[in-house]
Image (cartoon, rainbow, N blue to C red; front, side, top):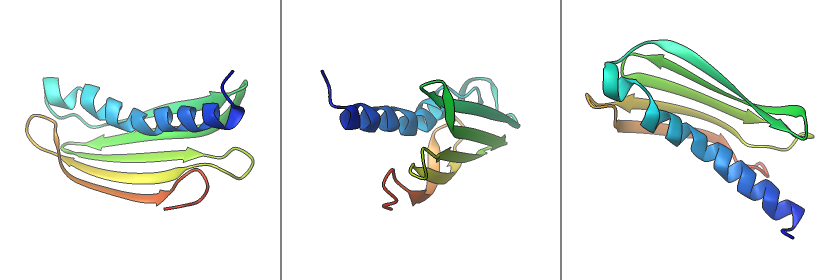
Length: 102
């Protein structure tokens, strides 16, 4: 059996990597750059504990990721500029990790 804390850390790492996966699968790389907003919800034990919002405007993507589980959780804001094939050319990340560390 895996310790509970290790499960939580692994889950948070997977969710934090979701923004990378979304960028790699984003239709901007395949069908041309489009504008729009996507919203995903993180549910843990049947309760909403986090949000991932992705706003796309042409070649610019804003990512807002927040988890609040009893006052703890990661909070990131990312700004990504994409090139003509949809790969990042500029990427700014600010926020704090799971235990409020940068």
